[in-house]
Length: 430
Ligand code: HSE
Image (cartoon, rainbow, N blue to C red):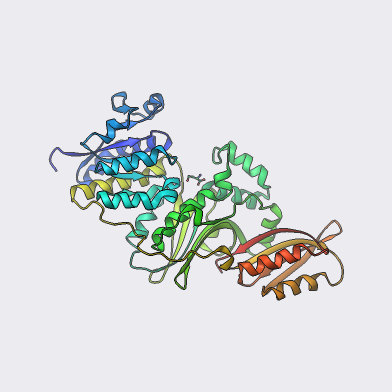
C-alpha cells in the first residue's frame, strides 16, 4: 500500500470518542499490519476542545465545523460517537451522501431511523457499521451477519444493559431493595442521574430492535418492542425466585415462531442452571439459538470507554479493508423480509404471580377456578408466609397466552378476597 493511508474523522470526543482515539493510536502498528494500511484520524469534531485535548487529541486536528469533515474528499470514514438522534442523523446522512463509510455506536438512532439510514447506505454504496451499538465490546452484530448467517435464528435472549444487571445482581446477592441499589449504582457512576432509559428497559429495547432486525430479517424499531423495566422488582420477589431455583434478569427476548416474531424486554425468572444466570454485575451476554449451531453465547463488557472503542475500531478497520478492496456495501441491509410482529397479548410464556389474599377457606379454590376458566394452566402454588393477617400466595403457571393471564388477573384483582396482586413476572429458559 506504499505510503498511503486511510483517513477517518471522529464526530464527538466524549468517553467513547476519546477511547477510539486512544485505541487507534496505541495499537497503530498492529492495526497497520492487520488492515494492510495506516488508519489516521484527520479531524475531530468537538465543541469542547479542552475535553478532547485531555484525551490526547492535538488542537490542530480539532474543529467545530462539520463541513470541514463532510467536504474533505480525503476523509473516507466518518466515526459518529456524538449520540442523540438529530445532529448525528443529519451528519451521518450527509457523510454517506458524500461517499464516506460510517461507523456508529448510536443505538437510539438506529433503533429509530434504521430503515432510512440503511437505505441511504445502500443508495450511496458505502458501509454503515454499528458493532458498538449493542453489547459494547462484545462482537455480536458481525457474528449475526456473518458467522451465523447460515442459520435460521430461532431465539435471542440478551442481558444487554449493564446498569440493571448490576442492580439485580446486588439485590440478589445482598437482599437489598431497589431504591438502595439504584442509589449505589448512581454513586458508582453506572446509573445516570436520570436512570429512566436503563431501569425502564428502553436501552435494552433499542438494542433488541437492532439485534432482531438482523436475526429475523425484518425491520424492528424501538416502538415495536414491548417493554417493562425492573422498578417493580422487590427483595421479596428475588427471595421467591431463589426458593424456586430461578434468577431474575432483565432480558431482551426475540423469537420467531411459525413465521412470526415477538420482541419483548421484561424482568424474567430464568433457571439458575441457565448460562445467562451467571452473567453478573455490569457484564452483558447474548444467548442465541440457531437451527444449525444450536446454543451459542457471547459474553463481555457492554459499556465503557475502551470496550466500546474496541468495537468501533474493529468496524473502522473493516471499513478500511472494504475501501481498499473496493467492496464497500458488501453486506447490504439485511431486512429483506416483513414478518408480522406479534402483539404481546398473542405471545406465550410461563408466569410467576405473587398476591396477598384473605386467609380463609375457599380462597385458593376461588382464585384457581378463575385461572382455569381463562385457560391459564397452573404448575405450582406456594403458600407458606403470612403478611399480617393476610396470606401470601405465589402461583407459577405453565406456558399460557398473555391475553388469557391478563384477563384472569383482571378478574382476580377485582375479587373481594384479594388484597393485592403484588407482582407478575414471566419465566423463560426452561
Ligand atoms: N446504559 C447502558 C448500560 C450502556 O447500562 O448498559 C450504554 O448502552
